Image 1 (tube, chains in turn blue, yellow):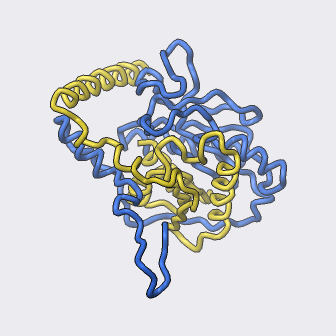
Image 2 (cartoon, rainbow over the protein chains, first blue to last red; image 1 turned 180 degrees about the horizontal axis):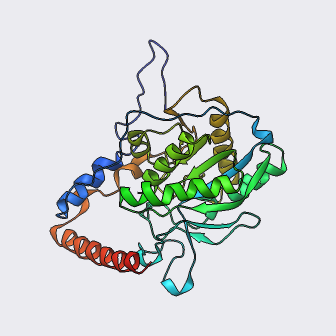
Amino acid sequence: MTTTAPGAKAAFAADHDVAIPYMQRTRDYYQVLGFSAYRWAHFVEVPFTPLRMPLSRARVGLITTAAPFRPELGDQGPGAAYNAAAKFYQVYSTSSETVPDLRISHVGYDRLHTKAADINTYLPLARMREAAAAGRIGTLAPRIHGAPTNRSHRVTLETDIPELLRRCREDGVDVAVLVPS
Amino acid sequence: MCHQTVSLAARHLEANGIPTVIMGCAKDIVEYCGVPRFLFSDFPLGNSAGRPFDVESQRQTLELGLKLLESAPGARTTMQSPIRWSEDAAWKCDYLDLTKLSPEMIAERKKEFDEVKSIARAKREAS
């Protein structure tokens, strides 16, 4: 992004240099493929809970949409084609003490411009462990929780999300960092 | 879909007393849903936590997310990371770009999508 001082020659950014309109692109794409339009979740009211303690004393939870690697389910490596077989349909939890082998071949990441070759681009666990060691955050919660990316709003809202909350409470999480793939 | 799922999760955690921050790359999906705090990285999907093999960008991304947790004055607070994916923004034009698809490619994509859906359906029903 470039800004200009008054009177200087205008040097605006390119018109396309904006956040990608994913909802519109997806809608147009699936319409051309002959599928009906997907209705994205949308709310007017948004809940907000202020932080009640310094982060240096907080137990921080991490929620991901990445999937545990299962070698029997086909290619899940860097740049793998979309792999629906690698999807998961129930909330899972895994220890945060070591970095688990989680992959994102089961979702529609931008395969043209990135390869998912570095887990730290979609799972900031190593960076969070460093933050805990440096005292920037109090502690890391003992488990990472995995959220299924289900197309059904009903299952997400009525089953998966209450389960994520239950597990966060079980871990004594004070604040949560959520990272989509 | 990932961005929508975590948006719904953040809302539920927050409504139940747990402050949250989402770090992500799909600004429209997250903001349309409506979330408390969102750190937007204008990167290709798959890089919500920073650039590949760039530890410094990953550190900065997490730090901005933590700062948002500490300082957001209210709901729907979005901050955009100042880190650029690349100098040239042309990559943004490519995602699901219909102008690059011939009728044959569209038919092929439809077939692939139907196959993927049937795999996912079988897996979902088995789980």
